[in-house]
Picture (tube, rainbow, N blue to C red):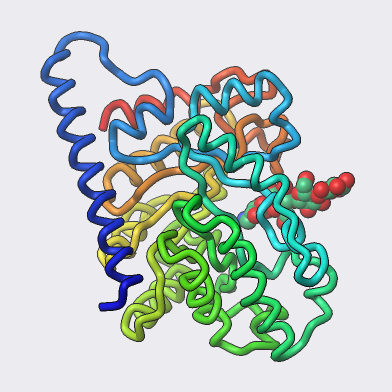
Length: 341
Ligand code: G3I
């Protein structure tokens, strides 16, 4: 066993022990306060009682807004940069790294005792223009040097990195991005090896959307995890973005999470949002939350923003707080599900 895999296993054991301790404490608390109202009052606190995190995607430029910051600090115990750690933001020119926005979020998280997810080291979108023009070995070198630069800068500060984002098509084939067409099938594992070298203690995730059940895309990702494990490619987790609508089919959502957990990787709900309103929207949020709680290896949930006002799908009002930072029915559904676990 390599030092790196031993460290990863130690980290999992530590996380599992923390989860067990939290569960025991919660059980003891439930016994002590049986019959009295002891439910946690925030998403983060309730998730923590279940040994999990509840996070939000954050844009540093909104932190000056009182409602944004106070809601973040009160409700969440994990953050991810919505855009600030992506390739275009962190390496606008070759080898010239800028970490201003990401550093601001990491500092805030440390001050508030929150975890930080890293999003995302390699993606076909939001590449700076200079990357889009590269071919062959030059693109491969740029990719590995980018990973070394960013994951190295944040070494020790990120709980889990989305190393590769959205590399598969709906039918389970590889997306024909510049990475795929220039570098061939090996680019994903090369990215994971580079991330492992840069930050051996961060959990390394593959992250995608449209994987909200057992389907051709999630099958392909499942097969990739099996293959990586068989060949010793470092992978620790799979992120399920979970961009949904009120009528999304979630009939195999939990089963899908569970089959990945059964492989021995963590599963994370990484970008949850649900277009809709009222009880239909709340029901979907509840189903997703319960699924995560029912799967031991589901370590936490991140919603893709705090308020509908700044959501990338703003017209669909997909988040837990409205434009005035008022809690929506969906918020109460999530908190109830967390407290019921
Ligand atoms: O920062 C510039 C700003 O300088 C400029 O004035 C403005 C003008 O349009 O654009 C700003 O950049 C925008 C950036 O968000 C920050 O607001 C980009 O145009 C815009 O494309 C970008 O959108 C982001 C999108 O990823 C890019 O594909 C969304 O905020 C972000 O929520 C979204 O997140 C993705 C995840 O990373 C991966 N999964 C899907 C998810 C939703 O698309």
